[in-house]
Length: 268
Ligand code: ADP
Ligand code: MG
Image (tube, rainbow, N blue to C red; front, side, top):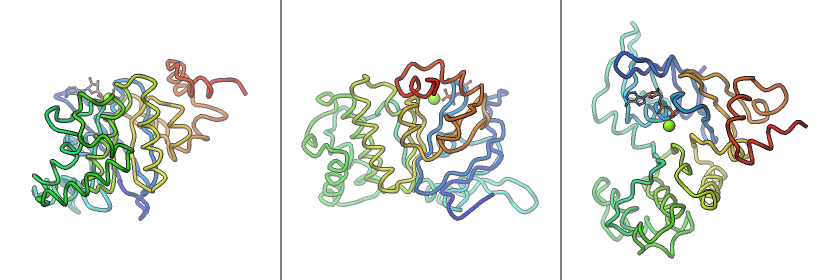
């Protein structure tokens, strides 16, 4: 079912690497303005799905619509799947930003340099305008005072916030996060999760792959549980985590020792 509220509509998406299929027909609607948390065991296909949505990977079959525009491929009325021209792919991709586990900042550029680089080289903005926009985004993630610092002078949490500011500077309609706090020391995850929570509050459409189950349960509008390349569960946090929990989800949660997960597992 497609509705106007869908920022992303995924239909029968399959992805193989060589002969091995890792996504087996994903059907998923991502609601506009919602925070969708994608959880699941390691190897279940979370990154692959996110990378297909960012068009960093090309799905083997199936379709993805981004704000009702086909991404990369289109199905003709007679069921043929055709690749769309590069300019169309670029246009749809422009609306999507991605934040990775490894922040991927340029070490030789300041925080501001990292945030403004693509604005100048890709978008062709004059440097002064790019810097104005870059500073606004650094302010948004609470790092205005660190604009002139190099990545090596910033904590992991600050570096990830710079990476988020960089993604925001390109004014995406949708932001994808692939385990954004997984390589951070535990005491630094909070500042990054707070930035994401604030973005959600501002109405940004986000898909977040995370093992921070407590965060997913409290900030996620929707939880999607991926298992062996399939969407096993998809619902509101209270539906998935509360009451009669799916045994596979319980088994998954039991492998996590984070406080949020422990809290959810406590018998009520
Ligand atoms: P997750 O992010 O949930 O841990 P991934 O999407 O990274 O899972 O991986 C899903 C499956 O696809 C795994 O079995 C993984 O080994 C395989 N896979 C991922 N990327 C590649 C690749 N580039 N080449 C071959 N196999 C891959
Ligand atoms: Mg992954």
